[in-house]
Amino acid sequence: MKPFLILCSLIVLCFACSKDDTDYAAIDKQIIEKYIQDKGLTASSTAEGIYYVVNTAGGSSHPTSTSTVKVHYTGYLTDGTVFDQTTGTAVQFNLASTIRGWQIGIPLFGKRGQGKDSDSL
Image (tube, rainbow, N blue to C red):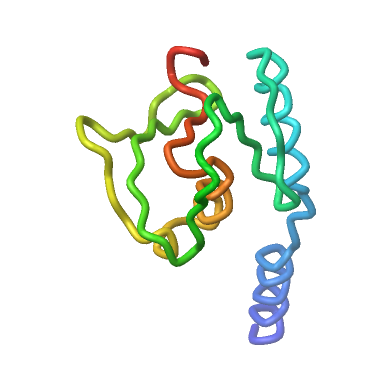
């Protein structure tokens, strides 16, 4: 009986440890590029794969990863659903405490720069 239980346990372990070979980065890239094309946007991308649209270029002053910044923002899913946004006044935070995409993307706009706004999506 013990050898049977050990065999069953090993079979379960093999299935539990099977690797998912899905290339999610490639899938995400296709979704983003389709969205950009469908919306007729002119977007740039970084080496890290962050896509951005600059509506109004900011000044020559750009924050660094250790800067404190103030932003107004709206976060959208590709289906147009708003998942997060500022209301009223800008939010202020240290850029180092944000997600990597913001650490890379926010400095691209420069001080008082603006990206794609909700009226243009």
